[in-house]
Length: 273
Image (cartoon, rainbow, N blue to C red; front, side, top):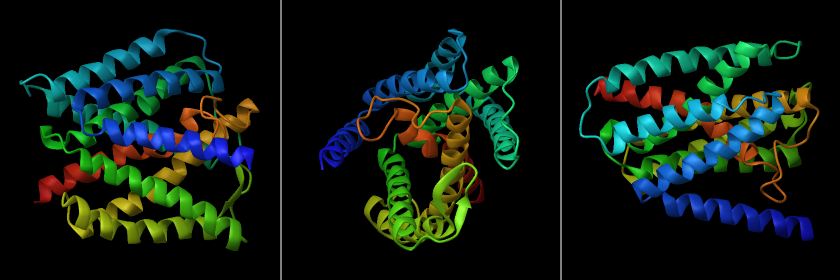
């Protein structure tokens, strides 16, 4: 019970802090900057990268795009830079997905460590801010709805998997994850998308439904990829900052990995409409 209490308290603090910050642009930027630094520190330990340089790259990339989107009145070159970052990020993430399905360990030579920290972690936070400020119009409910989909997926994947799970999803990487749990998380995320669409009035139900599938699929892949990094590092959690939960990266790995694909879908919706 004591462990459950710590887990509940730290979880509520994390969710409350996140939701409260969503409605003030500069607070959200500052919070995600702090989150990014913490996640970077945790991830650097997982991949045994001792250089300080990834922090510098994160600060330049994240704060540069945040200034461009939220403060600067100029949009010159923004779309082009965003598209380039998106293409590189998705390419790097596809390589990580390929590494996930390989029975070998993820190769972590020096240049790849810097590439991963830049185009997996740093750009993930950039696209979270881009989702909140989609089309240069601050829409916090869009990001809130996305986080709710992640939370619903994670919660019901755990509950369904624990009570009904039989077939292992990825036993080499995460023995507790099951196919039934994944499908349960996906199913309830799809249901949640209906209520999110009606409550937020940001996107149509159809678009939120597609987003729920994107979040479930790529969020699960992101969680599995981080699990493989942890298995290679021979650790259970990425950190200890959240009692009962582990590290902050353990809580954000799904949304960080899914963020570029969410942003890509939103851009496609804009072009079609």
